[in-house]
Structures are given as C-alpha cells and as structure tokens.
Image: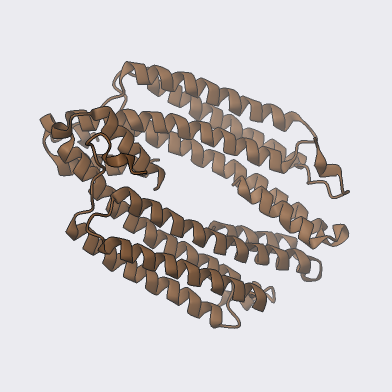
Length: 100
Length: 100
Length: 100
Length: 100
C-alpha cells in the first residue's frame, strides 16, 4: 500500500518542532469548532454569523497547512542535492500542493 | 453595532432543524480535528498525509456551510415577497456569499 | 438537451444592461490576457510575475462572475412569489453558486 | 524597485520552452474569453451558462499557472545546492504559492 518508500525517495516526515507547533494550532482549531457548536445552541444565531465563523476555522486550518507545507518545502530543498532526482522531487511537491 | 435590525429587515435566523443538523456535522468535524491531533503523535507521519487530512476537514466544514447557506437562501426567497425590498435582500445574500 | 425549460421554471436570462456591463469588463479581461502574452515575449520575465498577473486576470473574471450572479439572485428573488416553487428556486441558486 | 537582485539570489526566469508553452495556452485562454464575449451577444443567454464559462476560463488559467509553478519549483530544486540559502529559497517558493 505504501508505494512511497518504493524507490528510496520517501516523502519526508514532519520534524518534532513543526509537529509540536501544528499540534498547538490544531488545539486552537478544535477550540474554534467548539465555539461554533456553542453558537448553534443560541436560538437567535444568524446564518451569516455561522458562515463567518466557519470561514475563520478554515482560515486557521490553512495556517496549519501552510506551516506543514513550508516544512515540507524546506526538507525537499535542503535534501535535493543528495537525493538527486529533481523531476521526482518536483512531482512530490506538486502533489503536496494539490492538498493546499 | 448591530445595524441588522436597523431597517426592519433583519437577517434571518437558523431554523431548529438546520441548527440540529449543523450541530451533528460539526461534531463529526471535531472528530476529524481530533484524528489530525492523533496523527501528529505518530513520529513517522508524512507531511502530505497531514495536508490531505486538513483538506478533508475543510471539505467537511464546506458542507456545513453549504447547508447553512441553503437554509439562508430558502428563507430569503420564501419571504422576499412580504419583505419587499429586493435590492436589500440581494445585498444580504451577496454578503453571505463572501463567507463561502 | 435543455431540461431547463422542462417544468416551466426556466433559469433566467441576463438583462441587456448587465450583459452590456459584462461585455465591457470582459474586453478588459481580454486586454489583461494580451498583457500576459506580451510579458511572455520578454526574455527576462520572472515566474512570480507571471503567476501574479494570472491571479489578477482571475480576479477580474471573478468580478464579472459576481456581477452576473448578483443579477441572477435579483431576478430569482424578484420573481420568487409569482413562480412559487421555493425549493426549486433554491436549488437553481445553489447550482449557480457551484460555478462561482 | 527590484529588490530581487539585491542579494544575488534572483528569482528565476522562465525558460524558453516553458515560455512558449505558456504562450500557446494563453492564446487558447484568449479564445475562450472571446467565446464568452460572443455568448453575451446572444439575447437569450442564461446566467448559469455565463458563470460556467467563466469558471472554465479560470480553470484554463490555473493550468497555465500550474505549468509556470512547476518550472519555478524545478529551477529552485535544481539550483538549491549551488545557491545554498535554503531559508531564502523556501520563502521565495512560499511567496510564489500565494499567487496560486
């Protein structure tokens, strides 16, 4: 199932510092989702305010994604010379960008 | 601060059924965010898998937003005749769409 | 092929004034695309500048789309009472929003 | 105005082959914009069809952007070792990604 290790050019793992920072930010995202759940208990909540809050949560997730992507680019750029296969590295990066 | 009640054309509230369904879906979004937090405890997690999972959570939030927006459109279309001011209703809808 | 007239609730046409304004804006979009083509003749053009200009053209197209959507919402809201079927009108609007 | 050459780490230029392919695709985008202009001359054009066509043009522009971005990543990855400053290269790539 994991074709990623197949050619010795495994996609790179998240380093501990980035993983910790992503965790902190996701705890805040979870807090925002709970805020949304509380909003929905309010009988008089406005549709537009719910939409606004959903957009804010998605923005917070974008920032987590940006942080992970930056780490990913850094690893790829730093190791490109020793890994050697530019085309494969570029395709891995383009694939990561699809999920942005 | 709340100019919404100003002209007697208040933006419309979420009805109880939609509110309940949004709540159910958001509980599932919260579950996905917790899944992401668990992924980050795995030492060998891949960057790309984190990005993919973030995208999935944003997709789930989009579906909540779509549901709320549909309810919002329905209320506006259904009450447009009695509220009367087409231009104002259109501007309210366009504003809601900014948060989509 | 055109199921739209099927139930007597045809999707609404663009009115002449909106059509004229959309035309004017699209002429400007075409001008921007031609600007992009000229940029590409410059031997020393930067990738980032090309990406920036593409984003600007897409922004200009968004504004045409917003104008058309506003006209579409206005027609639907204004005629909802006489057309009557709220659910169908809402589905038509949700479909239009997919293309935004 | 051009701080890009300031530190000897100029952002990279588009290579002739990519520039030519971008040109070909943009000529097709221009053709689609002209198609949109012709649609607007049709008195009975539907709003939804205009929105759909705008989305298609934006999709075609996305594909040009993707091609330029891929070239940009390739250049950066290939030259990272000789240019040396990983952090700066990563920031340049993250900046390019803002315009995607």
